[in-house]
Amino acid sequence: MYVTAAQDLLKVRARLEVWDGPAGPADGFDDVLAFRLTCPSGILQMGDGSGTAVGGIDLPGGPGMYTTQVQNRGRADARAALRRLDERMMSSPSAAWPELFAPYEGTEEYLIRVWFSEPLPDDYDDEADLYEV
Image (cartoon, rainbow, N blue to C red):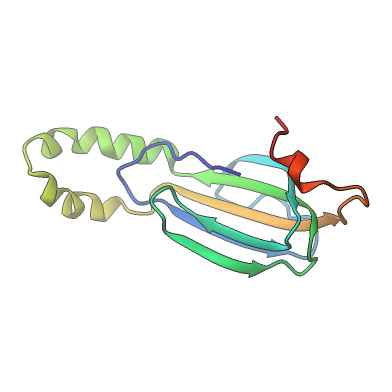
């Protein structure tokens, strides 16, 4: 599963929650997207494109099919902050950008909730999953 942020300069906050059963929408978040996640190992890892990762989260249901719900907030706010910062960025050396960005870190936020749905089918083939579209 990949979650694409609305921008790539400000740090994004992501929170992962493992639930015992179906989760309803969280207050203050938008755009509920739900789908099935096949997890043959029963171990979940989360990271970003630059190698920062949290790994080895043992899912209580073990290997199986999980319902996954992704919500977000702050996507438009993060893009607007970058538009406001654009002129300051152009007149500042890139080494100064982290200081400019610091007040806006975490403006864009994602909430990912997962819960066990069902065991893997008896005829499950993890090699076949690599090619599904």
